[in-house]
Length: 117
Image (cartoon, rainbow, N blue to C red; front, side):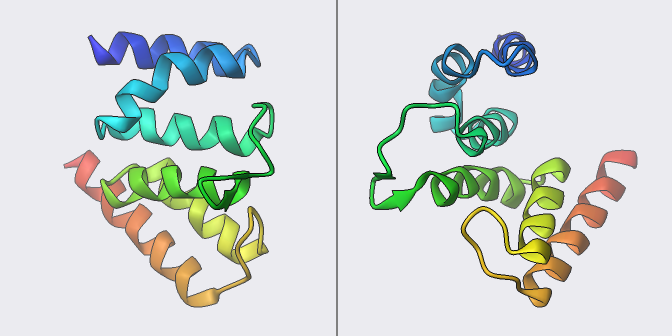
């Protein structure tokens, strides 16, 4: 079950075993599973993987945020919040952008409401 694999991957992230978590989660992220996409982004953003300075034409920060954004666009609340925080602070390779911060915060709120109902 993907949920079991993702839970195991999350435990590995908590234990700072980023390469193992990445190898476990990435096949599911590529299949579009939201929680796996978010985890992949978190792992890449941790900076603990041995990625080239630019991978696929992107810095590791931008690559990590790409995976986070994939999860956010599918309704992952944590991913929306991470994006809002990145745009607020100008972190992870993005410039400060109040409009995008507001957009992602609203998305987080909307998705949170959907989960509660």
